[in-house]
Image (cartoon, rainbow, N blue to C red; front, side, top):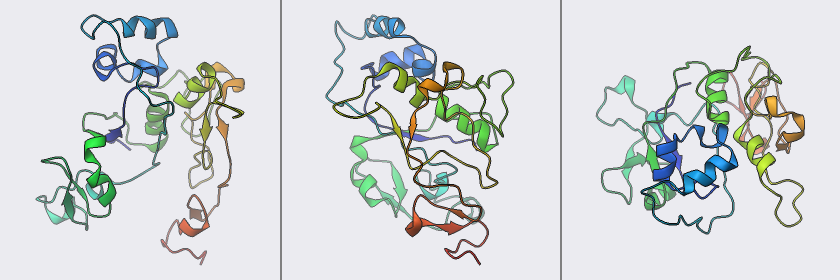
Length: 236
């Protein structure tokens, strides 16, 4: 489903500044550039003689499959007709002019630590295609793309690319961990875009698989299960 906003934290894991990333095309940064390209990007004129890589050593990419709804999170539309806005109220954040949902008070207090990007979107109105864009950084589908089945010709996910380029830290078996499980549609089909695709299975990210598919429920773990149709935690 198309989305017009997301939260961007810090800078790229390769130490590229936001300005340089914009010049290169942010969506292609991980999916289409090699290490030599990234080295040249660091030396882009106008970005200074040297670009600091910062102190951050890890990235947490939180991907909410199918939500949060924009009008109930970061684009509350309080002045819109009732049919176009959510049931919750907006609250001010630490940043002047930005309001978010009343159920996100900690994010509101930390708004000087994150950026609200309203220009991120894609042309698809279907979850599988949209997932592929957001998980691979590629706006176009690969030849032969099937929304109902991952294939070896799919574009590699950002996680798979990082798994290929980065080294594990300390005693970790892999530099990339995906949790709680692979993304599965309520019908049981696995969503494409999560794996290494044409890079080969050896570069697949490590999927913990601690929240197996359930034909009736969604939820990362039992306390957060809800029924597909009724919204209740019970099967009935």
